[in-house]
Amino acid sequence: MANVEILIIHLNGAEVIKNCLNSIFDDNPRAKVRLLFNQTTDNSIELVKDLFPKVTIHSSRRRMGFAESSNFLAKKSKAGYIIFLNI
Image (cartoon, rainbow, N blue to C red; front, side):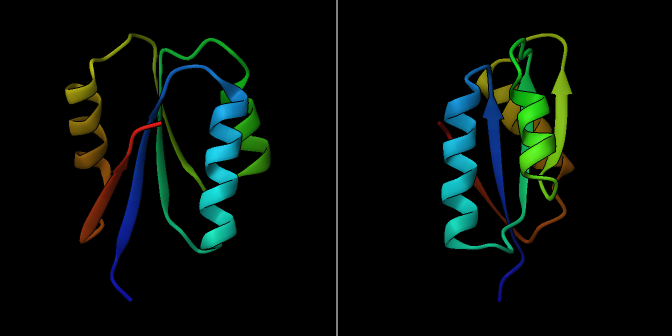
């Protein structure tokens, strides 16, 4: 199996990220997910930490643009293949 990681940029919307991650892990319980909370101010971070402990979490206090956020996550990933998931 290829070394693949899913990269997600998120800004608020706890229910949206919960549904997204549930869908990913329902399909593949061993999926590798890296998530950037991009100046998130709701309870999304706590929700992900509690419900999805396998997710690698990054947090930014300032809002980065989509390209900057994507580049940040891509540089953090050590996977052979990356998938950007835009929700």
